[in-house]
Image (cartoon, rainbow, N blue to C red; front, side, top):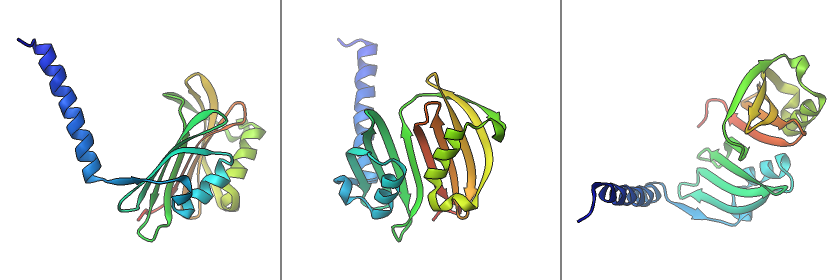
Length: 178
């Protein structure tokens, strides 16, 4: 006779498998080589994180969401992108795996020069229109870094740079998406 805990465990496993199957069926995707991803996603990744090497890449059957996992400098990066109906980029997130974080607001004058240089590099053509909304000092998995949020034309940006000058995270989202 099975104990209650064994039955609960088996039920939880069955629910997990059912959830995975239904999620895949409701939001089917296809695995692709990195080169098969939509050009707007590849060109932004090549510009923002040069040297990124994809391990997995997938796109939904509706071709509106892209998920990529890979590495840069031996560290895992996760990429999520959303596309509009015409295949244009509406949101891009690039993130290193660092765990949870705490943030505190800092003055713009406290931003180190290396953060400003990396921010300028990532913003590229959007730099002249960038209006900084907030600068944050952050500690994530005991890694101090800086986060700059702001707007540039039709885009909202969030850029995180480590104390060592490495780009840790980028979020780029089109205003009034889709």
